[in-house]
Length: 365
Image 1: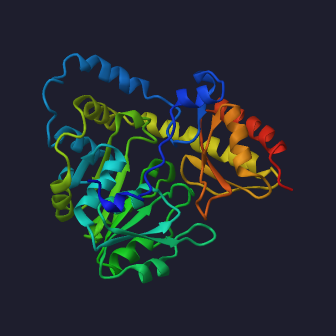
Image 2 (image 1 turned 60 degrees about the horizontal axis):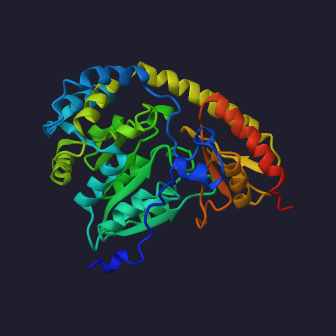
């Protein structure tokens, strides 16, 4: 029998496939541009060529090294941390799951400023714990005082996202330190977009035993399809997290791909620089449009607020033109917003033209 608390549970909103979108709108798949998933438009070709050479020699008939020693060492070199204090995961989502399984259960709760990454709530509630969302300020920065007030003796986790998805802004100065010092909860900072912002909480890991950082190779590294993530914390926390870590969730090929990418990551910052330049160019272009507000972003996406337009109509028009963006129907904070991933210059230019056409047919004034 299904758990009673899952009967009315709100699951993750799965994105439709490119094929489904193309078929629904009478388009070819090559006419569809995915600007809804925040992944890199650049394939790490040199990394994949290296992996392709090695695949034939890999013992894929055997389970991978359960400790993922080589991968952990590459991760440690990349972040400047101890390999014994890193937990490799199947993407950042499994990292969130592992934290939830380790620290949350029925009767406990997790606190997070909202809006934020929806999987924080999902992972929390799947453990039978309560998710307490704390509304952000009008500029989308977190309200630290309200977070501290919301925390109680049953608060086991505080979820943070830096930069925050879907708003794009970073954490306020001193937020992580205050939450670590003034609560007993594990403060988890999801840094999926770290490479685009340059900020990181790893610099204060030695000062706070109740701090944990999540990273991924899905965004800047261009390896979303390989599902490589990791947790960074002190030895005490890592020892507990490893109790809940599945033994073989990262495949042999994936782990090797992650190792090669981490040890040859010069391409990452080149691509990041290109995307940041495109992000600011798009933001400048969008800011000239009347009735459109673009929020500052330190990630690889932009959150756009439509003041005088029917957002559903704008999204529908964009879809008809092959441009797929993220909307937030039912979200009280973001119902009039769309989130747009920064892609290649060609696709970004196509989006700007498509949006201009969409706005001419979607005005509510």
